[in-house]
Image (cartoon, rainbow, N blue to C red; front, side, top):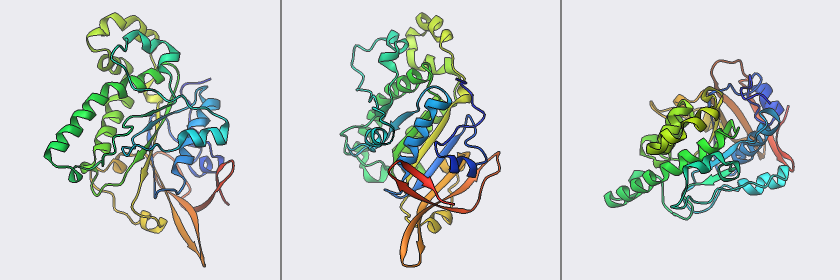
Length: 297
């Protein structure tokens, strides 16, 4: 299988068509919509599409901080009979050589903040709570780097970042702060430099393996699923994008929301942004069916 497809399929043929053939390699896509609209379902279909296109399924990075997960396991099993391997927390005796063992480093999902029960914005926390939360984030960085790097050296080329909760300002969100690190310091960084951040003082002893496990960082793709306050698609379309907002840096933005049809509400999506490619700019209705999300003509 090729590690650098011309386009990454979303796993939904009709959506690929609306996107001019799919998502561009080396880019980030934001899927934005209210809770329950179908974002996670889309994410699972996108991750599964990697199996046929790159030869490896995509990975999930669950940023939910309330203790509950985003149900990736349930969706994956129901839709594709895919039993996700969830990564357990790193123990103190984690060895650098473990990264080269596929069974120890190729995981399908990581829920980074399990059972923390914390909110994700600075305004929710007092000064001491902010310091504690920042310290917790810093401790999680090594776990985050090893998760992504361990998957990429074993062939994964697409990731789904889920569980991003709404905040009045992106700059006020710990989740956006962590995602900025993941995006710029892992996904957009050359693999040997990611390895340096991971192995630190042990890097010299791992150079030979690092070189044998090179991967093209320009061939990675990220799908970020973010929850909105807005429910109606019309409100999402008219939502202003802040300067410095993560959405301003996304190559592609897909909005998912409710639309009113007479006396009933239905679901629809809109491709609000798709740099470097032609796309369908209409409002496209969709349904959640037993076998996944389907766009309707």
